[in-house]
Length: 543
Ligand code: NAD
Image 1 (tube, rainbow, N blue to C red):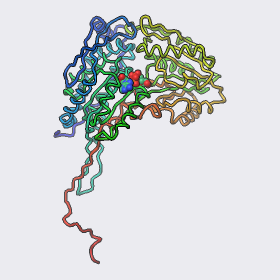
Image 2 (image 1 turned 90 degrees about the vertical axis):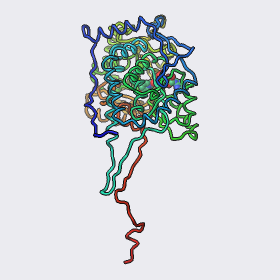
Image 3 (image 1 turned 30 degrees about the vertical axis):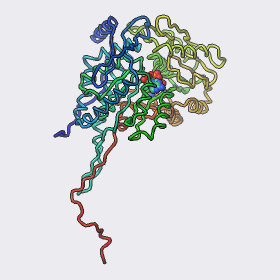
Image 4 (image 1 turned 180 degrees about the vertical axis):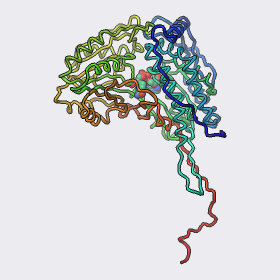
């Protein structure tokens, strides 16, 4: 146990590198990309610190270059999930008893490894296997994941620091125990940082974890696991399996020691998981913690005083960076009739100037969508908008999967504010706009509020302070992350804790102490220094 009340190092956000021509990071990253492209990597599962291979291998290809082979991963089955659960439970006691400063050291070391020797490896893996541009990879797999590791250490100590009052002869203490059992981290394809954060934040708080990543994020998950191992995460504390979601779910949710799920992904999957946990509730030792950040139908609302230059950049970056595959992506917008001609012409100019292609060519702003099912789904919605009478495709609308899964940045103009692409999360580069009459601002705010079940992010654009307050109040329940005169994407750890309400999740705010609180179960300890020696109270005395 520590003989000192240790303070964690000063924590600040990791600076984002520019990768400008001539910069050292640019040539370092290019070399790493070239190296990864020239190899065929073999990726095993990692269970109890051991590499586990199977006869069932699955090939990995860049979404933007279907014919190129990056490697294979070894797909597991139910027996591997059971092995991972066993390993997590075996490792639990020792890990839970390790003093907090050693857990902190491991994850601070992981941050330093990622900021240094692993930065380009993780960026290159994310660019190649998830089709992210340099900048999108840098702010995700480097910047955000480093920030998660470091800020979570700080938040952990702030939680531990929360202690009750103690009158004179007693000492009240609260200890923040890890949960009793194992935690399941179930992660999405679109953010490497989220994939790294979901298993590591419960582990930092003393839990052991079974981690199942998305089958389209295996390459960068492997690099994250390398970082964990080199940073000193002990065997069995984080176990990575490559199985299908339902196979993992069957084993995990029927296990009596399942104690929590840390999920990010789609709303439908999360709702089914919640239902399964509810059905099995009698079987568990403890009530499992259910933490899920899910889908969004994120909005941009401009009032008639909005600055159209600011608005259009926010629409383009908000809707099309990482091909719109961000839970926070701007996917519906409301523009007043008086501004529409100006907004339309600026939007056409800007979107038509977007260069699309593989991320290895750094001049491309825009790359491919993740896989064929996603491509087909998006193409279906675009085709439908081309024929539906309530919609018109005004920009983009072409797609081609011969080389890679490329869908043009597409803008749909809807005459019905409840048109399907104003309501449903498409998760791709499709922005739908509705033009409202200036005098109908209040009705339009009401429609916005009632259009979708999601409430993740949203942005308003206005230069009128009274309107800024009015819109902020009118849309109070529509977004867990609300932006004024900025795009609705790009939340930064330590600055804008992230998460949404309604159908968008439990709003446990990744990148804040609120999230870490879900991974502990507090024990109150009262110590009496001078215990009483008589059972009777003064009121019982004779007068
Ligand atoms: P997804 O729901 O398809 O998959 C997420 C994870 O769940 C994957 O590991 C997948 O294999 C697994 N899974 C799928 N079906 C399963 C089942 N039946 N049982 C158990 N596990 C199952 O999501 P995705 O396509 O990887 O990611 C995109 C989604 O994630 C979007 O809806 C997006 O909005 C959301 N997202 C939300 C946030 C947020 O913070 N709110 C952040 C990123 C992504």
